[in-house]
Every structure is written in C-alpha cells, then in structure tokens.
Amino acid sequence: MSLDARKTTKGKFVFGADLGYEMLRSKVKLDYSELELDVFFEYEGKTILNTSFVNLYPYLGSRLNFAGQALDIVGGLDIGYVLNSREKGEAKSKDQAQSKVETSRDRKNIKTDLRPRIQLSTDFDKIGLYVGYSLGLKNYRPLMTGINANTYSRMLRFGLSYRLK
Image (cartoon, rainbow, N blue to C red; front, top):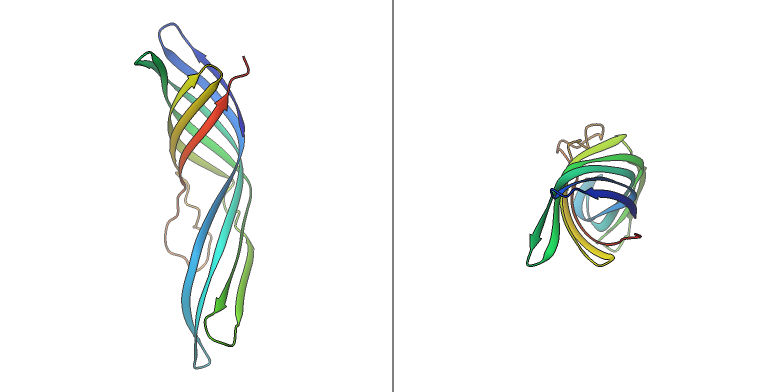
C-alpha cells in the first residue's frame, strides 16, 4: 500500500516519488538431518521470515506511446527502512519419536535496504497496472552466526493502482 505523486512534462519526462508500507514474506522448506548422542535424526518442516518496511521510491523516466496507450518507464532507488523482521518456524523428526525443533527469532540486522528499481506502468482511465524489479544492495546476513552465504533482496512487483484525480 502506497501513495504516489507523479508529474509528466510536455516533453514526456516523468518524475515522482512513492511512499508506502510493504510486508515481505519468505518461506523456506526445511529438510535436514543431525547426529545427537549416536542417534541420527531426520527433520522436515518450514520457516517463514516476515520483514516490514516503510519504503520511499523517488524516480524519473520517460513516457512512451505504444499503439495509442501511454507507457511510463521509470527508474530510481527504493529506500526501505526496516520496521521489524521476525523468523518463525518448526521442523519435526521423521521418525516415531516425534521430536520437534522450533525457532522464533528477531532477524532485524539492518536498518535500511537500498534497492535500485526499474518499473513499467500504464493507466486505463483511473486504473493503472505496473510491473517492477528491485535488486537490494545490503547483505542481510553479515551478523548471523553460522551462515557464510550472502543474502540480498530481489523483488519482482506486480500491482494495480487507482488515480484519485
């Protein structure tokens, strides 16, 4: 959910800014095994990471006409301020002992995420459609123990818009 202010000049130059709230959710299937006191356990389950942001997207671009329809191509930088990030999950053993491992952790390890973004949009009267792609520049995992991989946000956005004026 966001508010977008946009201006298009007579020369077909487009500029504006979008301010909004976004909730990103990542779900991962777990399938792992471990050895405890000479007993081998196999686990399966899932974990879900929910991260919420206040997002500012200043942009600029141009307006093209394609078969009589206006198409805006814009680019800019998403500036996402992280409000919270929480992981919650569980995995159960596949054997009959039914041991269970649960996690509920705060994962807010960065304050902001910067994401270059490109977006295409078009309007039909007051209803609009858009598609965009963002690629995060901040590594989400530098402070997590036991993890060597780098993790960056990547978002493909599809949406509807409604013009008030």
